[in-house]
Image (cartoon, rainbow, N blue to C red; front, side, top):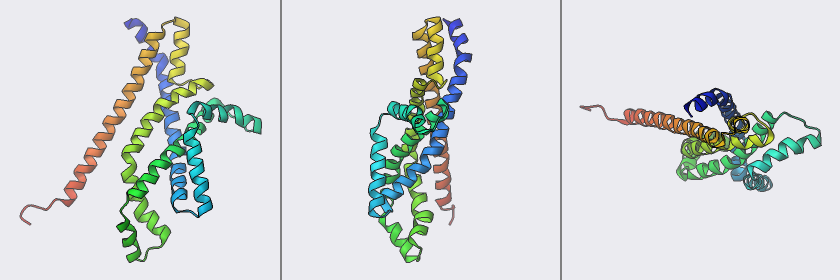
Length: 225
């Protein structure tokens, strides 16, 4: 068994790298899209608001696997042909945009109304208030749920196996189909997903704890003051 695991690990590592690549690239595509959809659904003119809300609900309502199929198999029928890897990034990026838009909407609504009033007192324009005051506060508020979505997105990259992206799940299945060690291969793949998830949570808590410590140090009153 140990020999089998040692033989699998070098085969699975490249797939893990591709899973991480798809996750990061999908976030790079999806997070700006999520911010734009959130801003549009909250602050745009009424027709654009309805359009953004409709796009958010559409993206959240379509299962990830169907989204992958629509991009990979549907776009070529419109003359847009692409490889499986960029297709998976686009599909998961669109999904990320829809789901994170709801997160950003909640973040914007959580910013106290007094912040808008303070911006008005300072004679800041609407968009300058949004860009300089409201958006930075909203982003701080939504960091924890965004971390949660990132973990879900990393796990969802296993769906890309369905369109032949050589990510971790694909590597595990292909290896098991040759060796017939399905239980061991999928268990190892699951443990690798778990290891990356736990590492991400640990790093987030470390960074979050350090930021809280720095904030506390800034507001601490010096002794003898």
